[in-house]
Length: 326
Ligand SMILES: Cc1cc2nc3c(=O)[nH]c(=O)nc-3n(C[C@H](O)[C@H](O)[C@H](O)COP(=O)(O)O)c2cc1C
Image 1 (cartoon, helix red, strand yellow):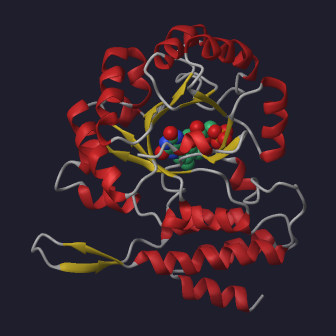
Image 2 (tube, protein in one colour; image 1 turned 120 degrees about the horizontal axis):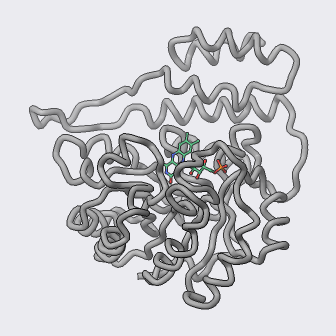
């Protein structure tokens, strides 16, 4: 199996996995604005994937197109047997790699012993990594500096670097810090030194508070890391990955919104199997789409009034009508 991590440009840029945001639709919008080198799916629960009841929801999160490659399926859970089973299927589905979430601080995830709870149970983390290798895809891990205090970083990161993984993405905060304090960029030199010493073949990606490619390149120049992951930066600037930062017109932003609406309609109707075993078509809820409006409708006169008008719409046709009447 080809390990795409070995043929990436250096530095490389990644769009962060974001639940209910970085689905196949939004990833295509970002690609059309300015494409990162690697995409991740939203995180997908291994227990859901492996159960009859949860499979449909898991599969929805795993929809991708070949034009998005290399694309990584991000998975979470704490049962090695499920990771092993899922990894084989993900390889069959055509994913380029698997990333294991060991950083999510959400309570519902923590109570299952998954996400950043794994920082406290390295023996399970190690079993999960081993199990995820069953499908033959390259394995990466996305994590935080530690659970409570940043002094924990050394033990945890050293442990992960010893697991023979292709890439380690570090969101430069602890679980307890959530996103309430600034990312600890000051720790990068020590982390990089450790990586160089014990796992020179594992790529190092940093994440947290990086607003665009230019910001990422400054950090690469200062610290010499290989990968830069950007998440919320695309909320204020969907063109965050462009090679030359510039102002974008209202026309361009509305163009992205129109693309989002078209893709939403295209991907909304997907066949799935009901309890009776018959394939039916499913239209997902419209309301979650509204959270994207503020990404495209901002920074121009009348933007907030326009956004308000759109918030009361009930379907994509109504949004298009409002846009046409602008
Ligand atoms: C709405 C939202 C959903 C997220 N979902 C995930 C997820 O599914 N998996 C994951 O590893 N991190 C998730 N994260 C964390 C981001 O990937 C990233 O680590 C975090 O936002 C910090 O990076 P940033 O400052 O560039 O946004 C999510 C963050 C946000 C804001």
